[in-house]
Amino acid sequence: MSKVTIDNKEYAIDSLSDDAKGQLASIQFVDQELARLQAKGAALQTARIAYSKALQAALPAPFTGDTMKFN
Image (tube, rainbow, N blue to C red):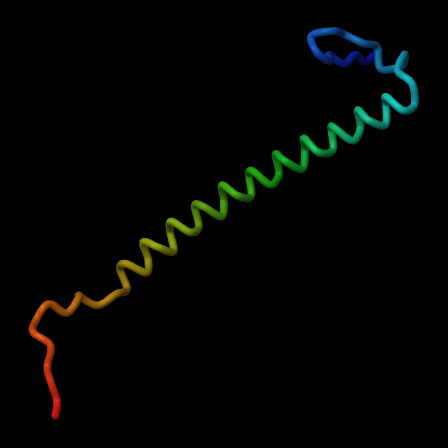
């Protein structure tokens, strides 16, 4: 028999109403989706850091001399 713990209370899933089972399934879906999005966000942040480092390496040295004026 499968059980679920909600607010520190254990329930047999078979004893839940269809509505409660539906709500539980929705919560499980949302939790899985949040975990997926958090993992995707971490991967994107890692990629952003790598792109930023690659950009810094690709930039020319900054100009430090006097600006030239043309008339």
